[in-house]
Length: 193
Image (cartoon, rainbow, N blue to C red):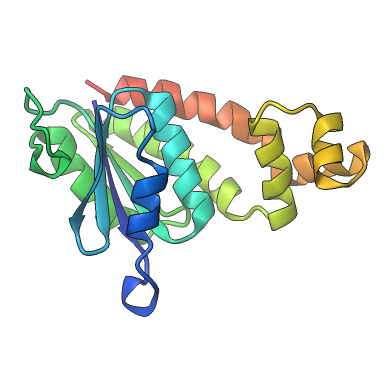
C-alpha cells in the first residue's frame, strides 16, 4: 500500500491551493481519497504504483507541492477518513514529505524496506527533476501525448508543425520520462513490502 502526504510549498505567502486540488483529484483511483490533514497538507491512500507515479509527477509539474510517498503496510481495516489511518506507510509518508522539501524534484519515497524505497526514490526523483525543468511548450506537447494523441494530432492541437512537436518532445525528455515512469512503478512495487 502507498500513502501520499503532500504539502503546499510557501503556503504562508501564497493562496490556498488545497481546495481546488482536492476537487480535481476526487475521481482518481484511490483506496482512500485525498483529505486535508492540516492547513496546507493533504493525504491519500493508493494501491497501484502507476497511480502513485501519475499523481506524484502531476504534482511536481504544478510546482507548488512537496510530495512524500510511504510504501508498506497500513493498519487494516482502513478507517473511512484518510487522515485517521495508521501504520508504517503513513509514518514513512510523513518522513518522506519532510525530506521532499529539500530535494530537487520535491518528491521522496520512504518505506519499510529501506533499500527498495531508496531505489524507488532515486528513480522517481530523476523523472521528477526532468518534469520540473520542462518548459511550458514541452509540457503542452507532453500533455497531448499523454492524452493519446499522435504527433500529427498534437501538432494540429497546438497549432505547430509535426517537426516542432517532435523537437519539443525530445527537448522535454518525453521518451526518457516514459521509461522512467515504468522503472519507478516497478521499484515502488518492490518497496511495498
